[in-house]
Amino acid sequence: MALQLPASFEVEPLGSTHSLRRSSSVATAVAMLGGQDPFQSFQGSDQGRPASWQSVFLLILAFVLIASMSGGLIFGSAPFQAALVDYGYSMEEAKHIWGLAFQVFVVGTAMVSPLLDYIAPRWFASFGLALECFGHHLLAGIAAYPLQEGRYILAAGLGIVGVGGNMLMLSSIQFSGLFVNSCTITAMMSGTYQLAGFIFSLLDASFMNFEVFFHMYEIISLVGMGLAFICYPNEPYTSSLQPAGCTWPTMPCRPCGGAPSSCKDSWAPLQLSRTWFFLLSFSLGATCGAWCSATFLQTVTRKAQAAGELPSAVDAFVVWMPFVSNATFVFSPCIGMLIDLQGFVPAVQILLAMVLSAVLSLWLLPFNLQWWTLLSLNCLQAVTYSLQFTYTARRYRVEQFGIIMGFTTVIQSVVNIGGLYLLTAPAGLAAAAFIVPTCFTCLMWCLKERRDISRLLPGHAVVG
Image 1 (cartoon, rainbow, N blue to C red):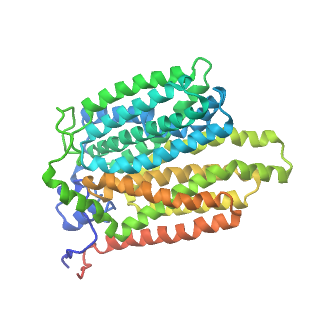
Image 2 (image 1 turned 60 degrees about the vertical axis):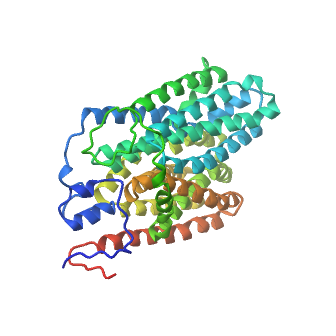
Image 3 (image 1 turned 45 degrees about the vertical axis):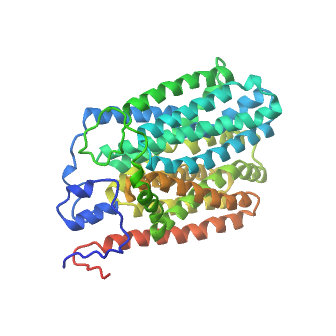
């Protein structure tokens, strides 16, 4: 039976143009859904095509810039706070500075992300690194600030570093379109983003002080801005068949005549149920990871005291927890490969399983089994942020990438309000608060993805 798609069917064309290389209308539709064709890979005739050396060079450059200058820098909170304490701030003041910086980071990212849909990735990344350079400059001037007033300047500087680094990250994801296995590449970028959180560990080095470090990074950001301006594209890459390379810059903004329709298209994804399942599932997973990270040491200490363990046993968790929670680059490529092979449903199921594992193990397992909680937390962070980037990149048009990223940040911020309350709630209540809504949204998301695929299979007519 021929495939018939009504005009109201909830499928938008993707940023990827894999579908243009398909001769089958069914395969085209499945490719548009980001899933796997049951008869052949959705990568189509381009499968196995070797990437050009220009594509590989640009990808390596993007990975280097993400690892050294992305917004993941600010997740190195422990060494940054320790450096502030060495400078004369109390630990409470250092935590307050980082907390304010994180709020600037979240709000700023939500505000600037939609701009990517209206200016070229080249300009978006360059503006972002210019912002980051300014943030490093503010941090490097710590000696000139009085302790009280300096708290807000340092918080603003660190937050600006994160916002500028996120602009670089969002622009860099456009390079994944040059490769057939784009979800794997995007997930690897997500893991590399977390890797940047280890950079601030240099603040603990005996040969480094606060001012020298951030003056050095001010120069590094300027160099990165130059590289991004030269090598990043004027328009997002949407196919591995596109030629890659450095081009002359064009005007940063799109023609004004397309603005009204672009604004209208920006809000269109919110009319789709799968968008809300995605936004809520991602936000619950991210908030659950943040809650587990914030309560882990307190819970482990309480369990150790109840079990009569020595303080040195808790110290091992104190040392390893920051490394494990930021080392998502171990599992992120695996999540991306799974999405490339099987679509998004298995990854969503893993997200649900990791939320259950992290929350229940932290609540119920004894002290000596809390290493499982750390492993679950690592996997949860990996799959959560891999899904955020890959689903946004593959299931929406390139013109909607920035606005969708902005939506994820806003919804996550709203859900985080509930997470803050759960920090002081009983463990059982917190577990139920995460498990029940996450089960609902993830299962509904999976059903929606499967239904979209099944409606596009041969022999299954779609009635408008």
